[in-house]
Amino acid sequence: MNTISIITLLLAMIQVESSGNDNAIGDNGASWGCLQLQAAYVQDAAEHAKEDWVHEDAFDRITAMKITMAYMARYATEERLGRPVTAQDIARIHNGGLNGYKKQATEKYWFKVKAELLRMGAITSTTNGE
Image 1 (cartoon, rainbow, N blue to C red):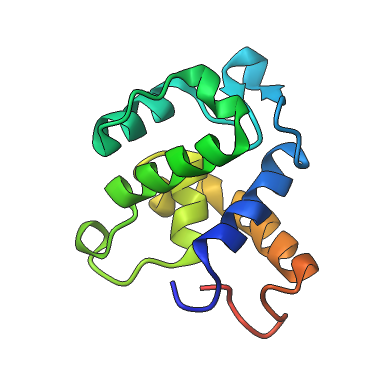
Image 2: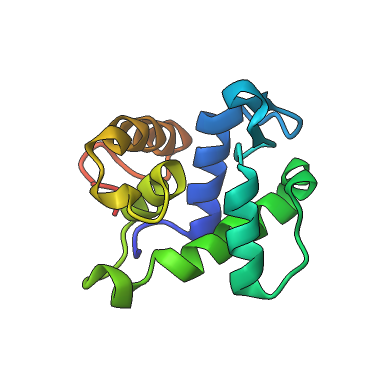
């Protein structure tokens, strides 16, 4: 991921997920916080990072970002994908789980994140945001 930083990408994802609301609750109560994290996602990331995060930690923006980065450290790796990881891979894995980068259903989410990156000025209309 060369064009944009992980923090910039996460900030774009926060806008898409919750419009920046750290207290957001979605998916009929299953997704919490600014990044709309589900309990299994938090548990998975905590296991990988050897942290004691719980679902309630999703309401703290910094912790939610750390949780997301730990999840990506586990699943959005060059070794696992067989190629360099892109911003699109990270967004789609966040949205669709460990194999989200392969799911057609996550393309729409990526387009929303990419539009937010454009709005933020993090990428230009001629870059792919990868």
